[in-house]
Image (tube, rainbow, N blue to C red; front, side, top):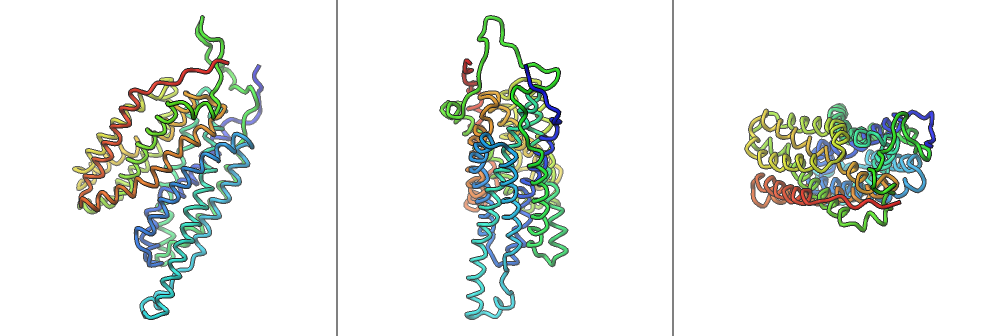
Length: 431
């Protein structure tokens, strides 16, 4: 008999939305801050951009211990702790001290000392934004995904999509917020970290309060787990974390996740610059279209997966479309309409991954160790975040053409499609 509860099951979805929105503020509008930080501190573009590679890497890798802790001590404690670390790291960036431009302009030993001080501030920027905020963000992002699926066993993919939709929402609202704050502060980006850091602290505390696992044996009113077919095994059990990570299916999923993330991040990092260099009069529209599609698909794809009862067909279709979109991107550069449509398609396919992969992990390995299993799987995104944007910039720089990274992305996605087409679910574990 299932144990019922008076705790409304939509509350964990709200917590996931608040938490993922905070992570969206943290991650996906960083490009808007690069030029102001360069101007304020005298840092090179590659120096500033490296902070983003650090945060992607730390964020991706730390989801694993975050998921393990969530399984052991509960999601509320993990989200609360991680959220405060995230907000603190982001806020601390506002305490950095830019060099005096008059001293730099005067030259001499004072200017040399000022440049050295600016270099020290750069390392602090890496620590505050890349390491601290990335570490905390991972602890905020992962637990709600596992919690939502426990409260919504009847609509797991839909629930997962709702908890991660905030990544797209956060990126969409961060751009105008950053623009307004920077414009109101004489081009300085530091107040963005001050005000948004405070807002992050509020959001993550509210998110933590929404986190609670359902009681043992919980099931929604009117819903019963699928009954095994006549003559089949009477019951199955979930994979343990140790069992899941020993299956070839897990590591093939990891490789597909890496391919999809690597290709997507490689192109997303180049999109605005590509449009501008191609003579597009409004490349920013393409970036916004990508963000909107990236957010919308995270919810819309869930009901489709729940209805189909699996993710394999959806995966193959979306990754195939993504490969085609990468090839179509280069000739679309000069047209605002074509570039925006292509960017929206790329955002749609890229965003869908963050609903499909948690749902697939649930389907393959069960809900018991979802935090640990998906946490380890998500490290693929972190590794891709460290190398994808950097490789895209290097390929464009070496070949003097954006076509090279776009075609490379298409090839990587084609490899993922081949893996997906041959991938089979692991055998069920008998209870």
